[in-house]
Image (cartoon, rainbow, N blue to C red; front, side, top):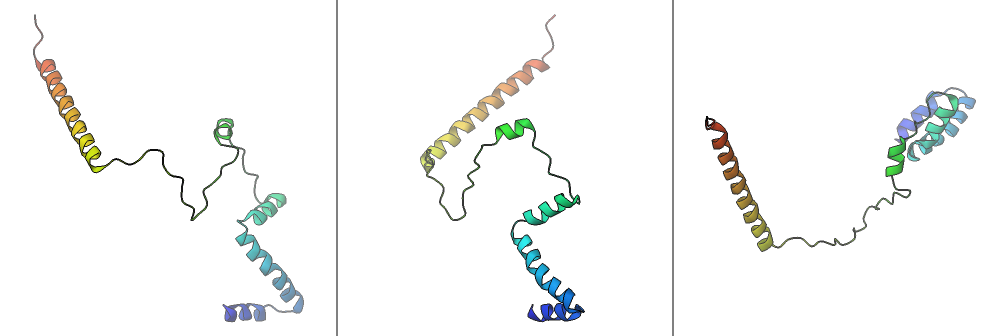
Length: 120
């Protein structure tokens, strides 16, 4: 990196251009680390970029006023609902299987009734 920068500065002819590069390089690097807001503001002010469109009214109303993103490395709050135990999960599985079998039986009965010829 150091060798690259040295070559970059040596390739720039004249002390005026070298000074301008020394001033602009940190500004460009700072713009990259600021999320691009500085560059975006300059582009909008010079007309190179249009302003961001406003959100639709229903979108703005559905957003909370304070987004409160959870910071990285912080544990989320404890859940109000505890996870199911193995017995509860097995019981739920059996209930769902019984409901599936009942639905299949009702469907086959409906198919049989719809396939029968109409009474005359």
